[in-house]
Length: 363
Image (cartoon, rainbow, N blue to C red; front, side, top):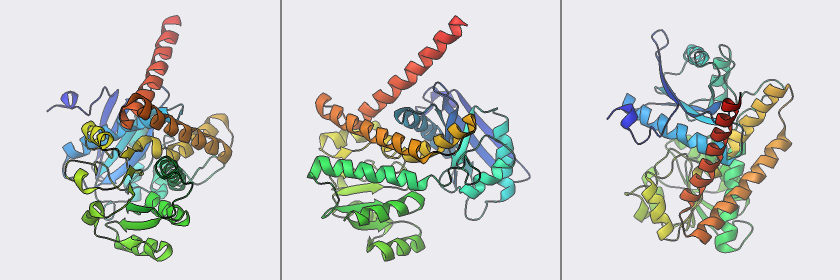
């Protein structure tokens, strides 16, 4: 199957491959849409089994960023980048500086930030070569690690689900199966525990598991066992596609609210969750806090101002209103939540595209 034949291609505006022999950089940048502004999305470093696997991942993630940024009502398009390699053994400052030079060739069409396997420090190395990165910690515009804001959005979304399903304003008496306690998952675990939830957690990083369990009282289970635990809420906060044909019948939770991208292996899984009466909070709505944080940095850079936490707070509040709208429309229209969220995102992207075309014709 060629690139254009792939279902994940989804009308991408551009897909770019970069190789640097000296540093070993193998990177793919996918730009899905610039209708609402420059494409913005994080860089993931992962030990993919093949370049085809990396391409499939970056295409899905890029399209997801277009929808995420539109749903969060940000003046950004959607894009994503992946670096092929083991972030634990193959990461070097020189590699990320080479990545920065690669971004320069796109001329501001795409801005990168951190994602799985990539830290704020790595992005700072890329910044030495390019202005087209965000999520930095230094300077008046710097927003730093977006993970805490992402976790805050997921936490508030969990409370939205608790109010709808259990008519309560906290999580007392509810059990959350939390898959992944990395950057976002660790912050989320603290918030969930403070709100009264009982946590059952898993991760491939045993040290992170032990640290989270020590401060939250969480129960630890093996990675594959997380699907079989008795829980009220399943919170996928690791890699995507954990909601699939093999796991669907094992999950007993009444709600799915997590930070991972592309949680549904296929749209049909979302339809089946809806049929079973499971409240699925669409991932790119729930996890939009981090990109909102990054957007404030870009806004400050464009205006010469400073990072504005109040602006971020207002956008996160608005995002929760959008989640409420998605859930209410799902009930009213008898349609799965992921379809409702997609419709909202596509309407906003298409409106921006139509406006740009009208301006072009009028010029």
